[in-house]
Length: 80
Image (cartoon, rainbow, N blue to C red; front, top):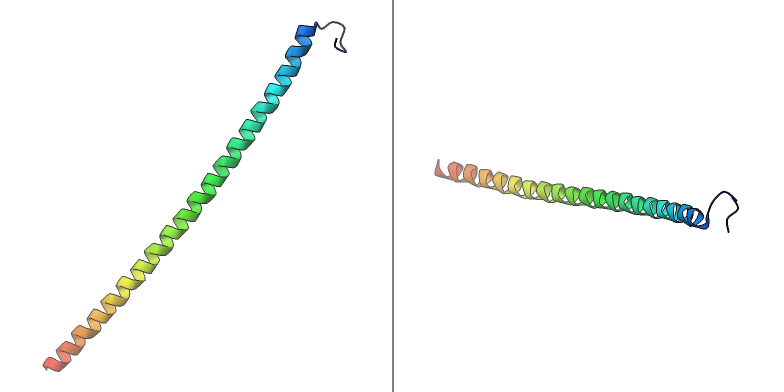
């Protein structure tokens, strides 16, 4: 039976089940924490990529605007 003579076999089995249940619950909590951390990291990566794309698009638009301004100045200079 169990090492404690005051415990019945059912109580001893119940304790083992509770301990295993607690281990299972702790493992589940650890897995959930890991999943949250991974999801957070992926979201951070996605945000960085999005910012990079936005910066690249802004740089392209800026270059186009500068080129349009140069062409407008050239057209004005030729018109005079």
